[in-house]
Length: 92
Image 1 (cartoon, helix red, strand yellow):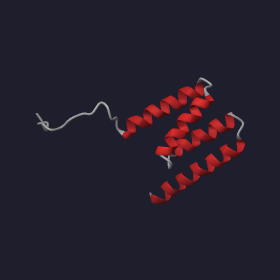
Image 2 (tube, rainbow, N blue to C red):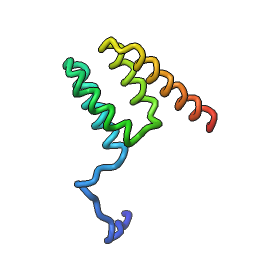
Image 3 (cartoon, one colour):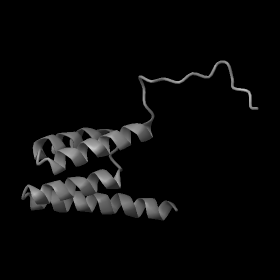
């Protein structure tokens, strides 16, 4: 049997970054599917401020912009996503 450190604690009020990402993706996807485009855009904008280099966020913003008929923003968002994806590939 393995001994657990007595000073180990679990915080339920501050979720890990991965949990926040999963929750945010769920919220954005739900808003998008429900046709709540302003809400989806606001959620994406908020999260992009925190994780500006997220390829997933920029791809979703491009998809949302295309659906809303904003082709210039969709193209800019696709460009940002591609730029970040390229920089990640160069690091590998």
